[in-house]
Image: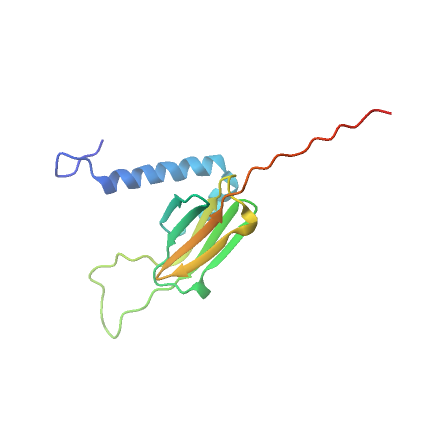
Length: 148
């Protein structure tokens, strides 16, 4: 396990490494969307659940809701945006440049427990929130047909 300057492993380093491993595994499970996301920016995501909903939150700072394209096909949600850089004023030159700009795309496969027909989206203070109601299990009546 990688070590930082202290006796404890670097949380940020381990987190990033585990996140990259999970993305790699997810691309392996659903290769249809792997090529779409390569070479683009991605939005950090948190997922939590309440009693009735699964909630996905994406950090999209510097974008307005009109600049974000959110699409859904079945159990797949895709977030796309083009985050434009703002050039420095006058003859300024960058001394540090850590913010990322360019095309952003994030593909998420929703779990089967979600009802895809009732997903809502909210955007506030740079955070896109998808509220996905959990579907209810229902019993299906089986009819018997007699052979004639």
